[in-house]
Image 1 (tube, rainbow, N blue to C red):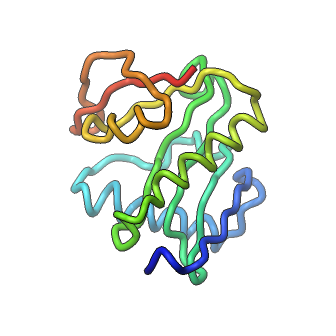
Image 2 (cartoon, rainbow, N blue to C red):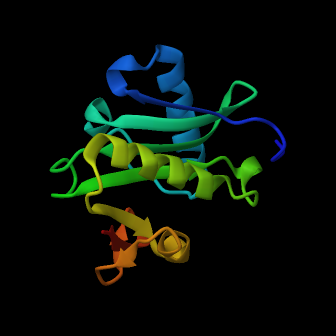
Length: 152
């Protein structure tokens, strides 16, 4: 995968996803969060059912993904989660583009409202450059250090 190859961005409510799209989303999430990070946890948490799923495809393969959750699903605020970039596509700023797309969609859907996330602690600098600020102490989530972050 190269940065010169076109990324096609899509965003769909769960009810709009085809079986193939949902399968491909599950695959990238499992590859990174369960296999690569060696973290055994239940990825399917029922929040996907009401989420907007935002993803980038390159040559027909999902290479970047996140989900957008309405207020009062995870937090009182809108939230973003399951932010993932395929390992072979890292280092080309695809994560920045994914987060920018997600924030744009959040603004279109909910207006300019606060957005809260639970970020892996080693990625807090990445989120800070997108306007998020640390609002909690470090805590373990599924055995991985995280921090709560808020973007006003």
